[in-house]
Length: 250
Image 1 (cartoon, one colour):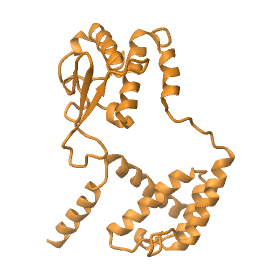
Image 2 (cartoon, one colour):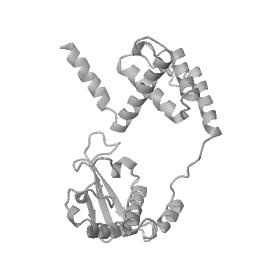
Image 3 (spheres, one colour):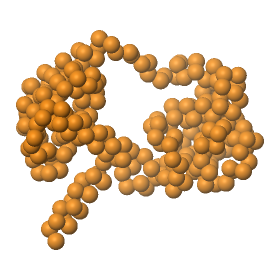
Image 4 (cartoon, one colour):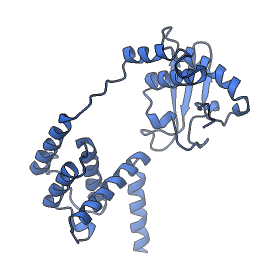
């Protein structure tokens, strides 16, 4: 039936997004619905995506919820995606792709509010990571914790890994990094990322590491970590066990 085709189309739209993006967009729509309730706007959701209502929504995010401009942009992206999915025109941009003037103006205001209390975070560069690695010498959190952090941080740094690609809340051997996904020798190592944000079809991608002979050498830190891991978790040394695991076994 046509209703089945409509559901299938909606499902395919959602599958085009990475899981983390789907969650972010779901949050954006939920906040928008909370705004409608807060403002006593009693219209169907798809009837509320006019320019004036979106202006009020941005003001609500800034003045009531005190949300950062980056999060507001994410919420607006969710609104845009939902509109396109249900066949409506983009309510946020002109035909040439630029932001509507009213939306652009309010986003600039949101950024000004952010700048008043913004704490700038330093980017992770080799110099900063070297300082962190130097502190993790076995006496900071303990030998195992320090070796785990150094190995995972250096692998993330050289492999350009996203946080969710090497750490998880709930482990699944078919999706997440396991011992069998790592092959290491004296001078190099290879990880198989079974799932990643840019690998939409989940073919898997290989991340290769090489010896750097400095304090951030991923090969040295991996060898050290694996040695301590084997001592602490001999019973969790099967090929399907997590590659990076905390002392608690999680």
